[in-house]
Amino acid sequence: MDDTSHTNSPSRRRFLGGVALGGMGLVAGRAMAEGHAAGAPDPLITELQDWANGLGDGVDATPYGMPIRFEGDVIRRNVPWLTADPISSINFTPIHALDGTITPQGCAFERHHSGAIELAKEDYRLMINGLVDRPLVFTYADLERFPRVNHVYFCECAANTGMEWAGAQLNGAQFTHGMIHNMEYTGVKLSTLLEEAGVNPEGKWVYVEGADASSNGRSIPLEKAMDDVIVAFKANGEALRKEHGYPVRLVVPGWEGNMWVKWLRRIEVAAQAVESREETSKYTDTMADGTSRKWTWVMDAKSVVTSPSPQMPITHGPGPLVISGMAWSGRGKITRVDVSTDGGMNWQTARLAGEPGNKALTRFYLDTQWDGSEMLLQSRAIDETGYVQPTKEELRAVRGENSVYHNNCIQTWHVKTTGEAENVEVS
Ligand code: MTE
Ligand code: CO
Image 1 (tube, rainbow, N blue to C red):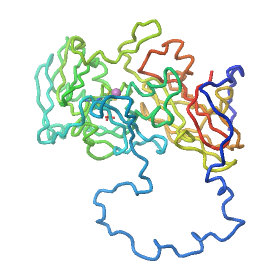
Image 2 (tube, helix red, strand yellow):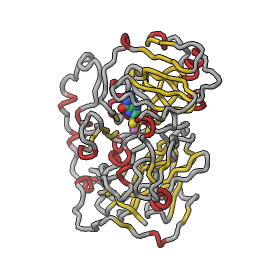
Image 3 (spheres, rainbow, N blue to C red):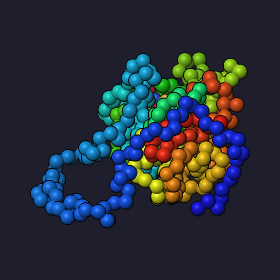
């Protein structure tokens, strides 16, 4: 399993963050680890249960199904103190509790600048204007008559992990890494619509805006607009949910979430980026020396262990343990994910589940044996460009601690002997 191990200097094995060791009782599930094989008969096997002794719900009980009530805590969650009010706010995907790669829309994080609006298909219009031969207005029904594409892509807010720059802060993968979702989109390539309008040779940018009060106007280089951007109307097979931009949103593969304009209403072809408008130049990264990184659109390779993690403690004793997580890169495919259980001294190559997608989440597993001792659990993604996900120290050395956006550093969970896990830093 660890034939591709890599070793770093042991001097790095010092971890910070006020970690308290020991003193924890056994977690509830531990006593169950050996099962009932040798003990008293298990009534769940030997006794007739209620659910087998009567009838279940008829087919019309839930015309549109919801998760069973036992899964009721697998929901988006907000961190109330992060923003002043829930209208211009963010919540987080429960990535700790999901598996595979596709994010169900119902628990995919939301980010609105002026709330999620309700816009009917009948009232939907998309205008293309500016440096084009033919300014056009499309209805929803018009869009359905263009050739369609289907692609799975991740959408990550540039602020994901943004609260972790100065120190380990939020105790759960949902909160540290949950501003991400990964869906299969159906729609029309933006290039198809731009070709219909006829882009003039002076056109070098598109300015895209939404129908909500914030408009979320952004400038995208024409080259990207003509490459893989999608004007999408379905996600995971069904209509976009209101909160994700119903009836039409822009999908900008690999690029930061703020460019994925929801409730898309207008596309203006321009010679230059529209910068005079306040909304366009918000997403800059402040560097250690006070200068700014700007137009950092692509999301660099990143990964996180989702289980075990603070919200997903180990509830069994020593023995087989599945370590699971997800990796992604805005520059293409993930080629390898390494997992460390000792804070980055030694690495084992994880197993990628399925063919890694292009600019899409990849699931990884490390099927291992836990000896019951504490772990400093990390994952490290490598993408097809050869880029290696940096440590927090490496990233801080370049970007300082004043940044908010584009924190793609390696995450550490301190897994205790009890199986509980905590967000920490190693250095
Ligand atoms: N589009 C509009 N019209 N209004 C918005 O507030 N928020 C942006 C982007 N598109 C926004 C928008 C930001 S910052 C992000 S991260 C993504 O939408 C989030 O998409 P989601 O809410 O579907 O997760
Ligand atoms: Co965002």
